[in-house]
Amino acid sequence: MLQDVNTDNAQQAQKLAHKLRRQVAKASGDFGLIEPDDRIMVCLSGGKDSYAMLTLLQMIQRKAPFDFQLVAVNLDQKQPGFPEHVLPAYLQEQGVEFRIIEEDTYSIVREKIPVGKTTCGLCSRLRRGILYRVADELGCNKLALGHHQDDMVETLFLNMFFGAKLKSMPPKLLSDDGQHIVIRPLAYCREKDLAQLAEYQQYPIIPCNLCGSQDNLQRQAIKHMLQQWDQIQPGRVDNIARAMTQLVPSHLCDPELFDFKALKQAANTQFKVL
Figure (cartoon, rainbow, N blue to C red):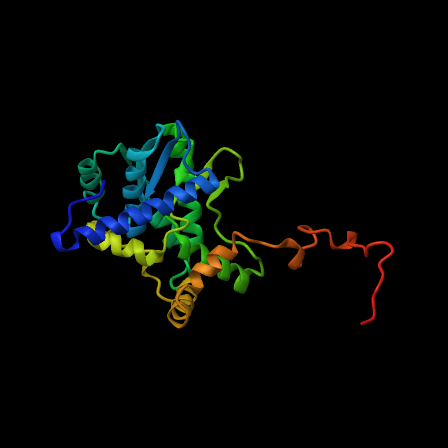
């Protein structure tokens, strides 16, 4: 729920929140993210993006012409110093159904990953498996993750530079087992706008002591590159994001996506010499 903010910032906060709400609604319409009778598990990490996602989904829930349910879920990974009271207190105040899951994935990651190495891969796999299980327990047919447009563009370049693949994070994804649908309602939202909303709303941010504390990640380098591009040419990141929605298979190089071998010159082609 949108909170009261300082009077001087109230108009800007309302304007920004409604802009972001429209972007979430458009993403939902374009990709079928939120549908009648959905029961959506809203995955909260304690970071600005997931807080903003919950706020915006609640705004849409109040305006939508159909009914759907939200269940906020946080995975307490037993990181040292994790403030266990923060999210329950916040969610009770919001009046939203919620559940806190306690699983010591922190110790597993620390045991398996050498100091200084990237923890994100293992941490993400462990977390995703737990969230899928909890979604089944709660009767949720969709899981909402707080990845935004910048995350999706960063992932595109990470896969290009380090994986030699042209792929990113889709706004809607069917899990490998075909049992769960993952949605990203913030697919059209910029990180800078979400950060501004978080500042207006004064969310009780909980820092991550695993991936959130690693400054030398490849993703950080990509993020810095995109920030520089946006400064040189404002709107460049938006253009890249739009490009991901306007692929032209015949002008790429994937023979599985386009049948280049079947291309033949039209019969009786005549050339006119000018």
